[in-house]
Length: 320
Image (cartoon, rainbow, N blue to C red; front, side, top):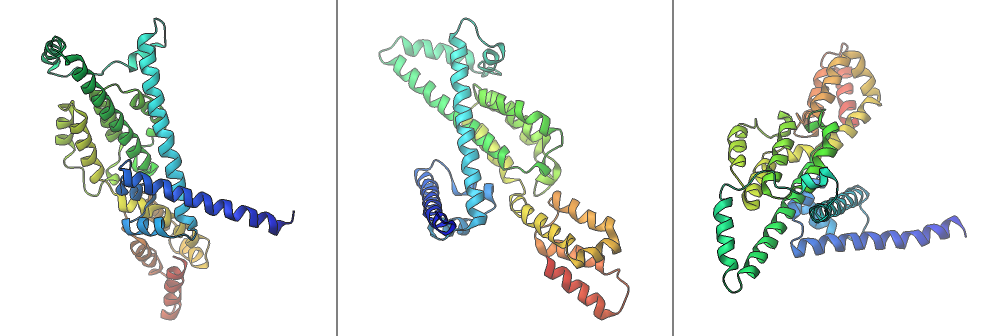
C-alpha cells in the first residue's frame, strides 16, 4: 500500500471521528448534561466560536484538539466520581475494608437540623408510602451531591497551574480523591474551601474582596443547591478570558524570543523581557496588544536613528 493510499484511508476516519465528537458535544448541550459556558471556559472559546465549530464540517486543528482533550478529561472525572461513590457504598457494607474508604464514606459534618430530620423520617415511615417518599428524597439528594462534586472537579481542571500556589501540585491528587469520595454537601464545602485557599490573587478579575464573607456563608451551607451557588460565585469572579488567552500569549512570546527582534530586546533589557513572561503567567495582560506595548517600551531604550528604532518596533509587532 502506498503512502498516498494510506493517507486516503486515514482521512475519512479522522473526519468521521470529528463528526462524532461534534455530535456528542451537541447532544450533551441539547440534553443539558453540559452547558456552553463550561465548554467555552475549558477551551478558551467564545460562544459564537463554539457555535461555529459545531456547525462547520472542515477541520479546525486548534479547537478540535482542545475540545477532544476536554471531553477526555470530563469523561475521566465522571468515571472517577462514580467509581469513588461505588467504592464508598461497598465499604459501608463490608465487615472488613479500607479504613480510608470507610472514613471517606462518612459525612464530614452533620446538618444542624439532623435531629428534627430524623424524627420527621420516623414519622413518615409510620404512614403508608412514607418509606417510598424517604427513599426518593435520599436518591435526589445523592444525585445533587454527585453533580456538585463533578462541577467542583470540572472547575479545578479549568484553572491553569499558574493561577494556583506551587504547593497545589503535591496536594491535588489527595484533594481529588477526597472530593470524589465526598458523601454529602458538607464534605464538598470543605473541598471547595481547600481549593479556594490555594488560588492566587491573580486568578481573580478583581481582588477577592468578598472572600471572607463568601467563606463564612459557605460554612453555614449544607444543601447541594446552596453550595453550588457559592461555587458559581467563586467561578464568576475568576479571570476566564485571560486564562483562555494565556497559551496564545506564551506562544507569541516564545516566537518573539527566537526572532531577530527578540535578540535585540534581550540585549536591551533581558530582565524587563523576563518580566513580560512573568506578567503573562500572572494574567496581567488583557491581550496581545498589552504585551506588545511592554515589549515596544523595552525597545524605547534603543540607541540609534529614529528609522532603526521604528524598524525594531515594527519587527516586534511582526513577531507578535
